[in-house]
Structures are given as structure tokens and as C-alpha cells.
View 1 (cartoon, chains in turn red, green):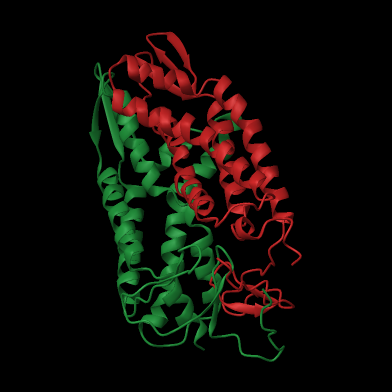
View 2: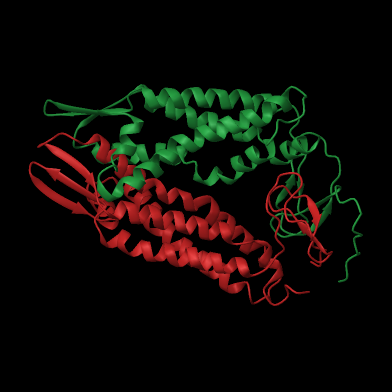
Length: 204
Length: 211
């Protein structure tokens, strides 16, 4: 579809409230958001947050998330270990929630954001609706990964029964929280207008 | 295609650029409940919801009261072998307060308590004068922009699902009793969902823009 965009018309649209301004304006006169023309500089931010997220995702999976002490016996669980533990205790539904939120969603997000950022340059396809849809799914679902951090917080706050049982958070909690936050920022920095515009055509 | 050249002094107020794909549209008056979608990517551009400001204010007040209650009442309590331990919402965040995890305690408190409260307060500040037919207060645009920008970071509903997962994990280990703060939080996420169904960003921005 050959639609007239604000950029084609020499204007700039506010990505926050939708109003249209001349390109020499720097801020939206209604909502005050920073106005920026579509360009690929934003992709650098996408990749920077993406790499930061990936860097923190590695220790998040290798280090213990939970340290459970029952009757003097300490047991360290990683993220995957926690999900397997639930599965072994026949809590299949919850095991799947934990596995989905802490492993499938983060990995899916890394792949999806990287795919979106890489394909921006190759504007050979018709319409970007599936790509926009993918970005919206990533934006919507990405924050749910934080669920595991909250589970660790609740368990550690609650299970403090001295010698009988106590749970403490492991260092993976912090790196996992950072990883989730960085990938959220990565997805947020992706300008969906690039899906249609592409790097090569941005000057036109 | 070559677009028409817009003069420097031309009025642009009747135009909308799709925030997602940049296509220009000419805004028309819509009846209440109608939706206008972007012709290319299908993003909802206009969704008039006149007269809903007071609903949003009411739900925001309700949400704030529930959240304040949730902070001060007990959240969960466990008991096993004659021992018991209870925790408030504050205590949940403070689980991370040891050593280098301390910033995480602050982050958790921000995500589950501070940001939801801030968003309620900013919504009330923005919409209270508008609901009464008066012009928006100063900085209402900044307040509502923050409401939108901070939305992904307010995680009250994720927290309550996290609580459910934690309860299952504890299940075999000890008996858990749910405190008033737990129920307040459950009602809170319903209130948030109801409030969201009455918020039309487009209508609110339009009302803020009318000086």
C-alpha cells in the first residue's frame, strides 16, 4: 500500500499522541513528547540494550536463583532447576508458567527483537503488519518475565522458619531482573515506523 | 509518490500521524464508541470515550485506597511445625535488602507499589479538572505522558500471579494463610483492569489540548 506518511510530507508525527508538526519543531506542542523523524539511529539503542540484556541473562541462568535451607541442608536452585523441581512434584501447570515466563519468553524476546532489527534493512516485503504484530507481542508479554523475581521475593520474605526451613534469594535474581529490564528497554527503543520505512529508504 | 508540500504556516491540527507506521490521516469527528484505525497497520488511532473521565478518577481513587491498605495490612503468613512467620508487601520487597541485592529491593518496591500509586495520582491530577469541564491543570500533559510511559513498569498484576506461583511452591512445605493485603491486591488488579477499559488516550489528549 502506497500511503502518504508524515515523513514523506515533510512533517513529523508525535509518537506519543499522534499530532503532526513541522520538522523544525523539537517537542510536541500538546503532550510535550520529544519529536523525532524516523531514522535508524534508534537501532543502536535497540542493540545496546539487547546486548546488555543478553550479557545479564547468562549469569541469571548459571547462578542460583533460590537458596533453600531445610533442616540444616542447603539446596541451591537455578531458574531451570526451579521449574524442574515443580515438575517433579507434579505441579505441571505452575512448572509450565515458570518455564514459559523465565525461559521461553526471554529467549523468544531476544530472537524476536534481533529479527525485527535485522530485517529493517531489507525492505523487500509487502506490508509490515506481521512485524508490527510481533513487536506488540514482545512489548505486551516481555514484562511478564519479571514474575520469577517476584516469586523469589515472596518466597524469601515468607519462608523464614529458622532451622525448619528458610529461603534466601540468590545472585541470579538481580541479573535476571536486569536482563528483563534491559530487554524491555530494547523493545521500547525499537521505532516501529522503521518497519515500513527501512534504513535504505529513509532519506526519501 | 510525491506528497503535497505543507506550508510553514499551515494548520496541521486536523492531521494524525499513526504513531506506529507514520501514515497521515485526516481526523474526523467520531461518535462515542466508534474506533478509527490506521489504514495501513490497523493501530487504533481514535477511540472517543466522552464522559468517562469521572469513572477513571473514581477507579483511581479506589485503587489508591486499596494500595495503601495493601501496604499496611499483613500480606501472607505461613506456619509449619509450630513456627510461623508473616510478611507484609513491604517485607516482600525487603527480602532483597541484604548485601548487593539491595537495589533490587528498591526496584521491586517501585514496580509493585510506587509506580501504581504514582499513576493513579497522576491520572486523578490530569482528569479531575477535565471531568468538571475546567481546563487542565498546569503540567497535566507531563503528568499524563508519564502515566503512559511508566505503564510497562507498573507490575501489580504480574506480582499477584507471582504470588500464586509462590503459594503453589510453598504448598507442600507449610500452611499459608492469606492476609487482607492479599485480597486488597486481588481487588486492586480488577480495579486497574476496569480503569483501563475507561481510559481513551486519544480523548484525554484531546481534552488536555483544548486550552
